Length: 310
Image 1 (cartoon, rainbow, N blue to C red):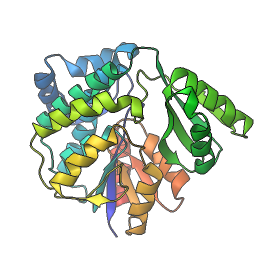
Image 2: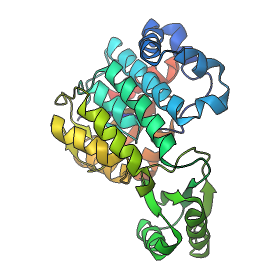
Image 3: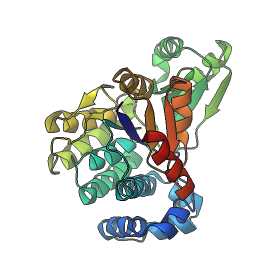
Image 4: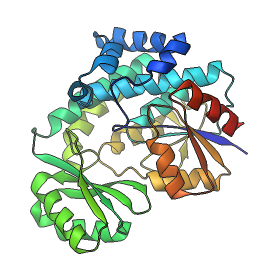
């Protein structure tokens, strides 16, 4: 049976991440050195010393998570981890997946996500956008509520993370009104998210336009391992399709539930989460209880993941 390796997106970062891994595997430090050379600052120092407010800034978060995820992927391969049948990444994590697939070089990916973070920050004035997680309400109901409030401004369902867990994004006032409407409709919980930009909605069009130029100037190859992309929730290997989907990803929903189900339908029974934290492992259990998903951030977790995926 094939396995999958999945790569987390924003929200998985924390000060001190990968500290244990770096003590045991030198490739972790070397990966961060490569990223720091591209960025022109010490990325490892920011990850280890913070402050958290700096690490949470999207133009820093994105390279930090990319470097963390690729470092653990390199460890996975050094330790003889089985080659996955599929790769996938949640939002930003898709860039990590494409590095792992040999579609985009690591240095190029670091530069791309740096531009991506800066473009996203610049697309919406600070404080004008908002994201909120809606728990315990059907996807279709949330989509309908968003459509009912189009007159209030941009507000869209943008992350379909697991059954009963959807994130909305858009203008602050519109998101607040939809959040209130979701509470009235019976949502179990509504949580405003502490993020600097409203990702994956129409407000990100300026960022998508800037990324189109960056992607056009970047070498993208066919993927050696199929990558299940956010936009289509289907496996892609063609370089042109990969490039096009990365453009659309910034202004389209992350179809994570469908992506995980797609991999399960292809026979995947186990997944390794290559990156800090265990957000995707938790989501996998909510999507398909028969699917094992293993975090890999610490040496102990990596050992368990290797055993669970063999």
